[in-house]
Image (spheres, rainbow, N blue to C red):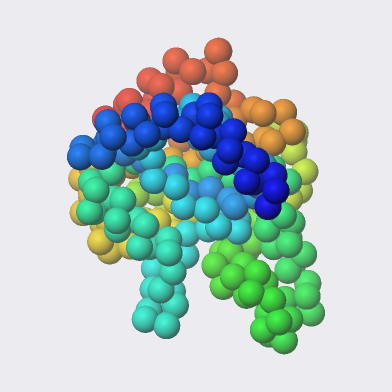
Length: 255
């Protein structure tokens, strides 16, 4: 707490005036451009690596950057994530949803361990909210990953996109750069796009291209950021060589 209090004192001297000016500027007419789902990992600071500012995005963070499938949307299990989708995309007419996974994700490491039936037993889930969260909302990611694992990580995967009739193909880490759990993290990131598309209140906007879903992935040890390219069917590093190509693809797919 001492560190946090010292940080607040520094903010009062260095950044407070500028931030208040920004708050006043967007107070009556904020125009956020995206709803950004990412992990609660303390190493993830999305406003830094996207260079975004006050009023630019809505942020939702949880263990494993999960968006529960709509099948779990019942009175007893309403969670923040679908409420954030409605607040962002329906109430505020935001047109882009971004899911951002990352390397060395502790939630994904635990999800990988949950392949063990004893480790994921009902008794253990009752003692651990984190295990219960992952077993309930990330099982689909683990199942898809295990299918990929059986093929030696070489086969293409098929995911639902904006509608049940719209699909996209994905090759996960074809250069074999990343660890097994990082591969799982990338699968999980793409699975969340499918989960987002399961919500009925987003159906019309997704079908009429008024709402667009994206996946990016952050390598915390190199600082590299990857965008999932439907055209190239894989996560592509965003850099000086790929920026224009990715931008053209995004404009073509999502304009």
